[in-house]
Amino acid sequence: MSDAMPQLPLTQIVAGLPDDVPFVGPESLERRRGRPFRVRAGANESSSGMSPLARAAMMSALDEIHCYGDPEGYELRVALAEFHNVDIDEIAIGSGIDDILGVLVRSFIGPGVVAVSSLGGYPTFNYHVIGYGGDLKLVPYRDDHEDVEALVDVARSTHASLLYVANPDSPMGTWQRREVLDGLIAELPSGCVLLLDEAYAELAPPDVMPAVTADHPRVVRLRTFSKVYGMAGARVGYAIAHRQIVRTLEKVRNHFGVNRPAQAGALAALADQDFVTTVVRDVAEGRDEYTAAASELGLRPVDSAANFVAIDAGTADRARALFAGLLDRDVFVRMPAVAPLDCCLRLSVVGPDDRQIVIAALRSAVQELP
Image (cartoon, rainbow, N blue to C red; front, side, top):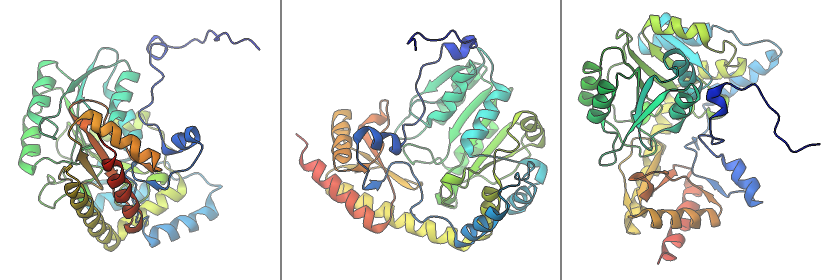
């Protein structure tokens, strides 16, 4: 068989894309290394797992796995609408926030259309924008936070169609005050849609998040069952938005993207808020433990409202050395790729026993630093 590349009829945009993907999964790294990790402390998964009620609901739904899931996600959307005190026509579901971001970008971004995000922030939004030929403008972080004022200024000066902000954000775990977000929405440039990624909302301080409404015609709130609900592998996310935006998404989304057991599990998980309260408490304990360990080792932990802690090693070289040292000790973590964030490691909160493995590995790696 010839090694010559076939002449595929690719679009000009796709033909020009790099081979990069937003994330290299721990499974890929394990295959490259030839051995498994002892601890997965890099993907921000929930070590608490999911609610027992959600597990039971998903197991029961397996008996009907030969049937397609409800393409409207009706029961889940009804429950979400009641939970957030909005109308069902103001709720859209998808297979995780990543899927919904793709549909939103497809709806608002075409070749040359501007989208704005933070340099070093969550990369999947960028991936979709570039994939549809958009003109991506990136604004550096300031003091470990997304620079909301600068983001708005760039969106206004470039006549951007989309502005992406995460609160709390990844990879730093920092958050914006409620009045800052309220001001952002009030100052949103005309013709620009704000995508407010709130994947970690349940873990944030209660006085941080703006009130959930769907009355602004150009604000989309994005939530997920992947983090505090512990259902990352099931892929369930949702958007709260003005009904006109939801109707737009209905034109282009994958209507069978959320499978039957995932819908059943999410519905049961939403009803078990006692479980969510327990997870939030356990995550806070884990963050405190990482914070104390990092401080003891002479590293700077960044205050976090997510299920991970970013730890500042001082320089990018030191961070890369610690990153390599943790991988050598079979602990999977991640680190931001661009300055000024690349002086940090990001440690997901794992269970108590695994946290001891992570902290011991970090302590050993620090001792090997020059």
